[in-house]
Length: 136
Ligand SMILES: [Zn+2]
Image (cartoon, rainbow, N blue to C red; front, top):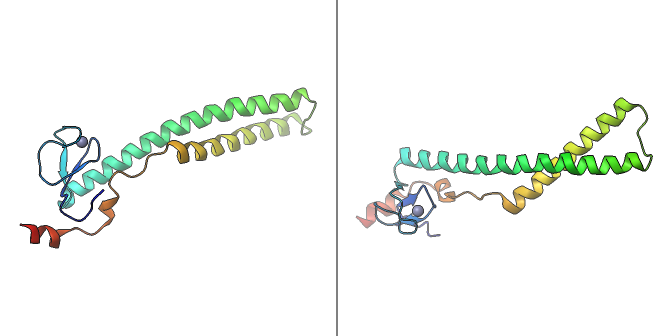
């Protein structure tokens, strides 16, 4: 992706960059934002954060299910094998904590495999005003 300042517009639907305002050259949505406009930059950042958080929350839900089922399976096997941790309260604490650890690990793996990258990393760069001004 070119971030040299000539691709002044970014699509809120697909992330494509464009030289001219109007419809997105990739997805044809009428959703191009001017990356030189501070207000529109903030909108793009917010849209990106919301998109990434929504994906992360879906992955977290899947991870919790994995933790519940894998933890139930693992600690069920341990119980069948006659392994326990003493008092029944301790057993439940260990099972719940173990399932939470499994869910946390699953979430980390899912984020790594399926998590979304930032769509507008060029927003970290300073405003390309000088280059835009030279172009006009
Ligand atoms: Zn688009």
